[in-house]
Amino acid sequence: MKVRLQDHILVPKHEILSKDKAEELLKLLGITREQLPKIKTSDPIVKEIGAKPGDIVKITRKSLTAGESLFYRLVVD
Image 1 (tube, rainbow, N blue to C red):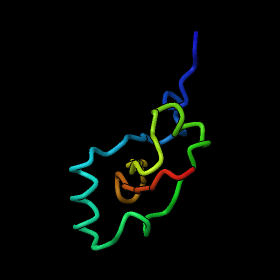
Image 2 (cartoon, rainbow, N blue to C red):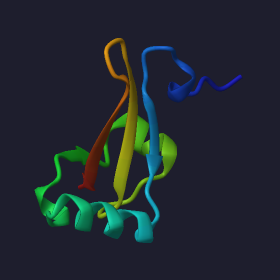
Image 3 (cartoon, rainbow, N blue to C red):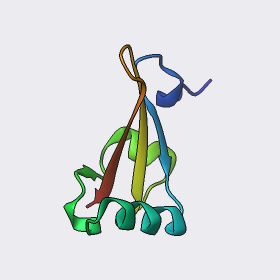
Image 4 (tube, rainbow, N blue to C red):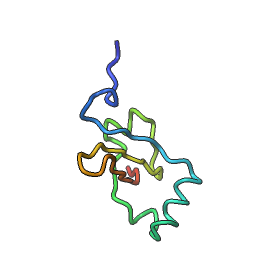
């Protein structure tokens, strides 16, 4: 049985944004892709979800005060 990282209670949800959603996000934030925080392709969760360099990953973390917090990362080599 293969264990998935995303099934662990301490690992937040990671998902790759579609090209349309990524462009919409960048426009909303008024930034370029390169201004996002980075995450490497060697990160185990990036490998698991199949993200490629240039993809934007949406990370949804549970928060005691806010309910959910959203974070975005640009996948780089």
